Length: 36
Length: 142
Image (cartoon, chains in turn purple, brown):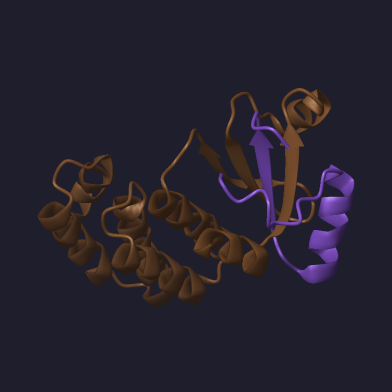
């Protein structure tokens, strides 16, 4: 994806799942080889 | 930009890099890049996108994942709406025929009568004659 600059990606999976519980949203997990 | 906004509006965004977070790849069974998974808050996978996609196809796949979440929690009205939107708004995407197929299934589940299945099979035959989803729906033509 060419969107990495503006999306606040979370890098800790457990933090992402906790946020999903809080916000009642699913997680979109991007597995990437692009420079971060 | 519309992909960025869609992601921010609908998902908690998370990312793992193949060189730095191999354990996260292993944890979620990611074996190729790019891969995107749509997970619920328990970490259960509901949709998987593997390989690069152009913007319209990618957006349609994200929407397909949200529709699947609605379908799996048996909210067939929301699923019908989400699948139907993909079918109408992304007709040239790779997800379109699949979305049209599941629109019919969600209608059937919601109304418990077979009319939507026959109509879906007819629609797919007319608009996506080469699709596997059309062949799957062919059984509904009776």
